[in-house]
Image (cartoon, rainbow over all chains, first blue to last red; front, side, top):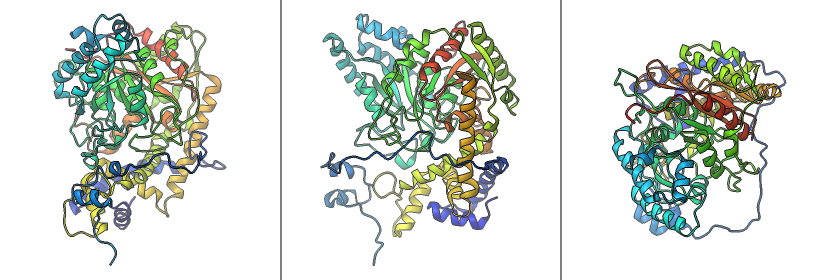
Length: 100
Length: 493
């Protein structure tokens, strides 16, 4: 089962935050799912390789040339409403200050 | 005008070519039907005006002898596929204001074939759900109701809006996505044919990602031949999707009138003992086996011994991939951003994501983050990937002995809205029969096969080897022929 300590760490990793009330109900439901998932421990996987994809994938490559350009307007079309006009003018995504 | 909505796609295309009516009339009749059924909450965004403009172009194309394969056919598109200039929300507050500057390959393919989109259909948030009750835009209501009971039922999920759209005759076909059963289960709940082709057949370019190794576009129609027509238009290699498979798209329409004489149909009899499966589902399964026998198929006993772990494997891998895919929603470049002031960057991420995602999405992100975390990855994620290989091996072994596998699509008929909400596990069990084929990336379908005592549809699932959509439709059409005496039309429609 997921402990309270682990939950705090998961919230930080997932960049999510729950109130104390939300967390109580959430933890119970989460742990019922984890109890089901724990049944995986019974499966015998000796000498079995993990399956990463069902298809024969390989990394396709192409020539290093620009095929799509001049799409700055499209890239900034959906910027969040806060500072949207400024973001579109300077073609930068505006975020809270993070470097002193 | 109301007769037009009852036509099959094949009938409509013939009538349009013979100028029995216009594309404008066809589209208008479906818009009227959509408006009559607003209470079902099928669409997140309606595109009726644009649809009528495109219908005029379709009529011109018919006039000029330039009609494309599916010219003028009104369709719904799950709000998971980016449509240029038309809001695409994935059923989430996180993308409630997102207008894509480009079309998904699927949207482009189907538009190029001449279909006309009436709207973006409602769905469970980020395709996570089996009931269409997790959408930020409200629940979808199943057009079907149980006899003597007025309670609203779920259409299934996550492609509930698409299922309700076709089942209510508001469109002739609707596109959906299937990651763990999100086409097959709602098809079963709404009396429709639902098909998910082989993983890699349909491009995922422009499809909002949930679980990248499982997501696949698919189709809802009212009969197998219509599905075949739509699949021929949807499938195809796309360079922009690195998981797209470069194989020729097969002709599929002829499969729907092929006898299944001498086809070997595999039955995983052990799954008949699965806990929590309604008796009427088992009865339908047994009756469907008789239908296959009556057409001359050979019934073969097969085993899928690791299918019992499929739910656990899926609820490790899908949330893990989701937690990675949904990390991009941070309020920086698009989508929801918190209105709170004076935040650090980290706080902005946290408030944005906590506000933007619903409970089910947050639960799956947390599970995914847990199973991918350093101390748990071996026990959960890597173990799940190994068991996934065991499940794929089971199918490979089964297909040595049979050409198609027959089992139910869902363990019950459609349930009431509000049921199964206390414990997420009860909701997850809806997908117990659909998940194995998803994990193996195999082509699969749901075909309506029975009506319950209280008047609700049930569906049977077919699974075939990878890239054998021809056999899939061949076997599916046999079930269809076997129950041709049943009208899978909701009361009042």
